[in-house]
Image (cartoon, rainbow, N blue to C red; front, side, top):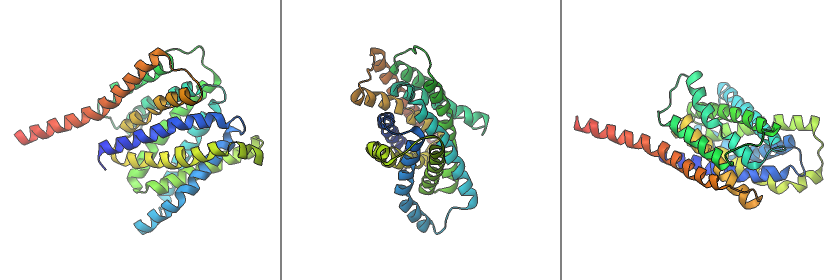
Length: 300
């Protein structure tokens, strides 16, 4: 898979996540956030399990203990990100949540520099800044006052950044994207349902009322989109991946407008154009630079 193909895969994952915001919001009319997260990732883990077993047979071995530990850390970061996002949606809008969650576009390259001493291509910094400006305009260009849900969404952004960084390193080291996906889903589902059992009432009626959202988010937003994420991250860097994945804010706002009646302001359309320009910038500049260096090498 080429880098361009990988980035398109990540863009598809972002579009799926954007649609998932709507289901995540409407589901909590009948079910608590921890039970919803637990059930969605349990469905995702079961859906991916057969493919993870096929991957193990193809590779001739199961993941090592060290690989399972790495997968478990990814799952812990996923749990923290998914639950803070889901609880945050109780007191903030889908548009605000998708905007604030996308702050990981800044956190990811900062983590890469501070912890791993890995400096991204220079275009990531202006690209990330453009994404933030575009997403801010998409949200309306102002906040009337940050709610508890908004602060939880910012916390979620940090844990998504950790998950993206750790997932990229784990899949590169193990070459087992399906095992990683299944393991992280299982960890997240288990932790969420344990907390749900302790603090949230649950009954069959609540599950039945939200079953469509659980299945959609479990099979598509979780099972499919997170697998696409770890597959795409095998062929690109974490900072570039964050740029493409953060476009979920664009898709989240669009789907919220279509299905929940949330209004995109005039400034939002300018924000959409800036987001699109940032994606093109991050995709084309490295490719053009590489071609120029190749031509200079041939001339020399």
